[in-house]
Image (cartoon, rainbow, N blue to C red):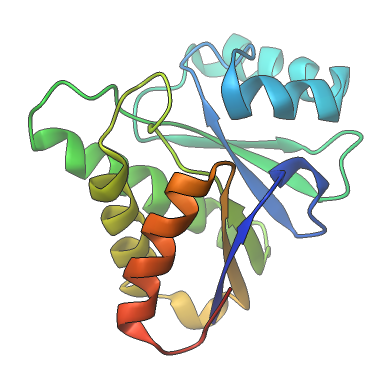
Length: 176
C-alpha cells in the first residue's frame, strides 16, 4: 500500500472510493459533504435516502457506501466524524471513521481510497490531532496489504502542511 498526500479537490479524483465527511442525516451539508453532493448529483442523495429509510441516520464513526454519481470515482463512502468536545474519547470515534471506511471499501473490492480531513472543519477537531489519528490508523490497519493506495486530500494549506510533517517522519511509501 502506498500513501499519497495532495492538496486539492477530492471530487475530481479517479479512485475506487472517495470518503465523505458526512453528517448523520446523510442529506448533504457544508464543506466537503456539500461539495461531494453537488459534484455527484442527485444519484448520491437518492441512495442516501434509501439508506436512511433502511437504517435511520448514520451514527458517529459508522460508514455507508453509495455511488459516486457524476464524479470520476466509483463510489462514495460516507462516514460521520465526531464533533470535538475536548474529550479524548472522541479520538476512538474518529479512528472508527477510518477503520470502518477502509473495511467497507475492502468489502466491496475497492483498492484505492481518498480521505478528506474528517471532523476538522465545523466539527472543530484539532487538526494536528486528527491528522495523527488518520495517519496512524491507516498505517496500522490490519489488512492494509489489501489496499493499493490511500490518498489524504487536504483542501487547505494548513492541513496539507500538518499531514506533510507527520508523513515525512515515517519516510516510507509516501509521496507528496
